[in-house]
Length: 142
Image 1: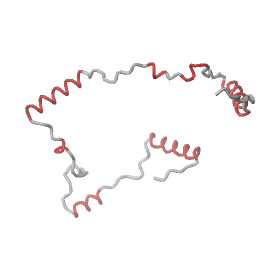
Image 2: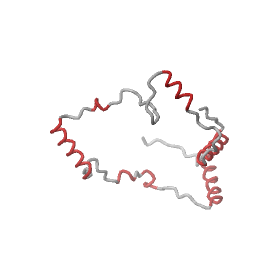
Image 3: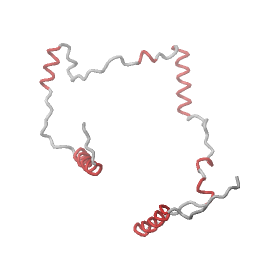
Image 4: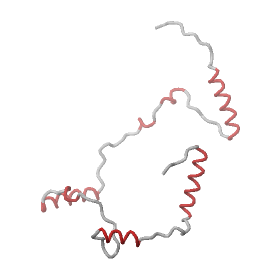
């Protein structure tokens, strides 16, 4: 309290940064306007009056009312009955293979072509990934 604080002037790093900013502003043709005074610490989000309990949309209100009515007529909704207990099998239009022999036969039949040209989106993605790899110096291992 009330003690002497020496002022040695502006730090050399600050001087260099301000000089570099002037040069950069000329190069890009745009001058940055830095906040000064009390407005530099002002948080504009604090000026917004947020409504933390907004009125529900009419469709949500209808959905809630319909759920309440259905539960009064049919009983409470049992979510556990809707849970998926095992993975969906990937089956063809003739049905799912039922034996190991059928599974092996299906595995032999499904042959995807490898000489089809890549879609343009895929080609662009591969090209962009290569550019990113070169720029960042990191190779993805998939």
